[in-house]
Image (cartoon, rainbow, N blue to C red; front, side):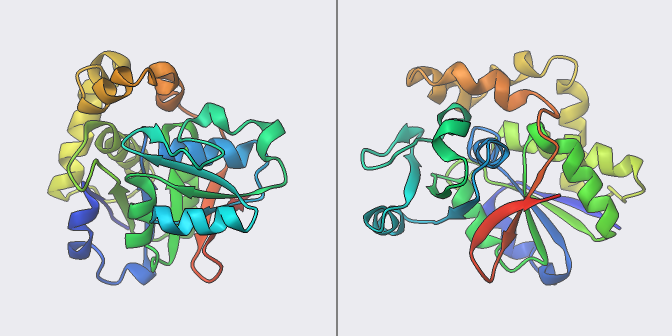
Amino acid sequence: MKVDVCFSPALYPYYSENDNQKIVVVVDIFRATTTMCAALNNGARCIIPVASIEEAKEYKTKGYLVGAERNVKRCDFADFGNSPFDYTKEAVQGKDVVFTTTNGTQAIEKARNAEYLIIGAFSNISAIAEFCSSRQKDVIVLCAGWNNRFNIEDSLFGGALSALLAQKGYQTSFDATLVAMSMWAEAKVNVRDYINKTEHIKRLEANNLQDSVDYCLSENTINKVPVYDRETGKITIVS
């Protein structure tokens, strides 16, 4: 079994050969995949990811709860933005939530044909590693990045997950995987200090949205794996 890291959705076509036989872990640490994990952990029945604002608005007219964000800001028509703190148990328990973001939901759309498309974050990283190992499948970590460009936080997750999977017998000999693991080895001593120099931290700070950073970097606060069903277009929890 092998684990590879794709640093951007724009690169995914070069990784997608036979992806219908692989596990793709989509990650958008700040903040889409962390937020989806939080919403489902707080009892949302499912997440319906959509790539466009237009689709989200259409769902809103049908009475759905909608989370929508572009360029870190909540869209004015939406019930929620892209903060994990928006999706409280009181707000989402037992509800279907439609969700669109700048980067994370675009990455999901790219990888929707994978055998397993799962949602990864630091909050559920150990559960993700166990899921992958138990299925005995090759793994691609798909970093959502920022507008198809490389970012540090998603790549750090790729390195951290690859390191966990290496302990479970996965091969990590791909260049991108080795780079991500090297980044993680340096950063894990103090992830917050390492991450403070990143572009996305500056975006969040400029919009007074830095309150979720520590939560997004906290490991193993959730022991659940959200899985995308390409037949229904919904993300639900798999025990």
